[in-house]
Image: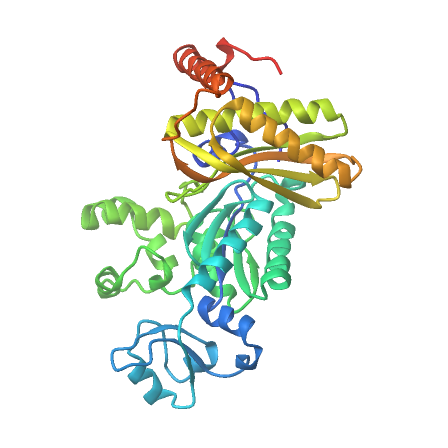
Length: 407
């Protein structure tokens, strides 16, 4: 993943900066999709449903199918279909009412597993997410291994199947994950996105809806490769901006970055993968302090505080440990975040002997609005937050290098 970045370097955990961080590395973007998610969760809870045609949804007269198992799909059942119609097609199907609280719980656990493998994870729904795996292993060869670890942990810890495609762009990865179903892994070799897409039906491109597809079919274009062969300028003249995007995506070109956390981010975190494994405890503590500065600055910029602080530690053998602590009072100051991180590190090392550390990270979760009232006895906390805001202001004007802080 690289060495800790210099103060002026792009933040490796910023999705937009990630593509600029190491231009020599081929992009390895993965799209993970939990197969028939609602059905799979229900089967994890009730194994007797395995192998049977299952429909998750309402059973009343206005009931709708929320998820259909592959066994029921063979009869023509699908999501968003009236339940009455689905049961006419497959009368032997087992109807299960949805348990959305359990789906949310499984989704959160799944995204936690993803973030253990990459700090750049963008949820795109309750059951799917993109992850930037660029640079893992020599020449990016670790991307497949990381995806396999995600699949193995999701199966072992959640008893859920997940399909994934690794490719050079988001678009190709999204198309490929559908091709990897059920419960499979597909990797498009570096530089072969266009060749992979070429023979596939045009409608498999996410941007091609029914109307757009009909217009292109009328022109004799029915495959993605057929669209790629059209003149880009003609497509722009004929379809405007949609034609430009179609030309790019059909040729496997999609520079859209994976944005860490996506729009609905509910946490702030920083982590670094060391260039060489670290056994110096003081260096680990200094790194946590630096993480605390950055996390705190982000929280203050968002006018939010964190109730929970999480430490992430990865040994040289890739064993990953996470420790969390929920605090009595929500925090945002560098001192409070660092102290919580150090405490978690001390607790972890009291149970585990220090081994070579590959990665260390600090996260702030369980965020709340910045509306905490400090009492008369909180003078030191007030001073710490005033110092933080002064440092934020100076750095905002003159750059991060303009002022440094001691331990």
